[in-house]
Length: 304
Image 1 (spheres, rainbow, N blue to C red):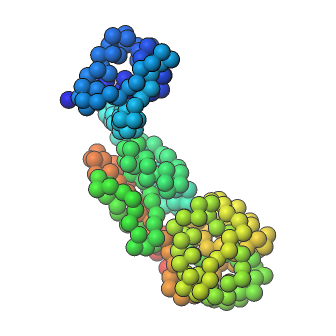
Image 2 (image 1 turned 120 degrees about the horizontal axis):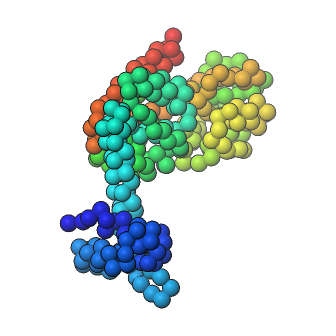
Image 3 (image 1 turned 30 degrees about the horizontal axis):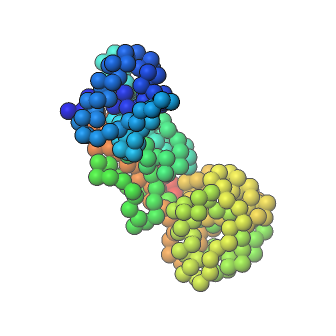
């Protein structure tokens, strides 16, 4: 059976570069380090560490095992912190991830509700790939995520996905744009217009735009790319181009801009909360409930 100390030793050897340095970092004697490494290699019946005159490096098998060892150790660290907080302070903890545009309107009110119920929140903000990696590694118990309608997120069976909100994508244009007077703007009318897009060309919103423009027989030309929606609005106001922006990310649009829905089928992204099935302390379920209530309020305001 694997021992947590075996995984600690493997990680320390990878970090320190030698068995002796790993022993010093872990406050183990070198014979103890050697014993734990030998036990780990015997478990897999394979060499995981290559020793040489200049230190020690992981073999290909060791490198394969390392991220799994790190994930297990990180998960245990979070479990220890959570249990200690509950035992010493009666305080439950949940580790949540969010992408930036969901933080203010969707997550913040839910966090307030959980705080009132005695739940401590640990928050990680990042773009979607980072959040998905953190969920896979068990570093997060829950994360707000988004996708194109009908798309499957790259999540394993140990993660439950709860839909929250359909976030429409809206056109943002300079107030003096020729299409600004239209109630709904045909994308075909923007065939020769430059676009301000996401930093990642594979961003779900950019993929929706590419699909919709493809239905009209053209490919959007991106003049600028940024993930900061305040910068997007500034660039559009400066005449750099137009943009397709999620409604949740708009905030209060600038007076020198107009916001219009595109004509044709509704373009949108689906916002959900992904929760580890092992998050069984009740706080995760309370988070889902609070997010669903806030999403209903937001959707109601949009409809009104």
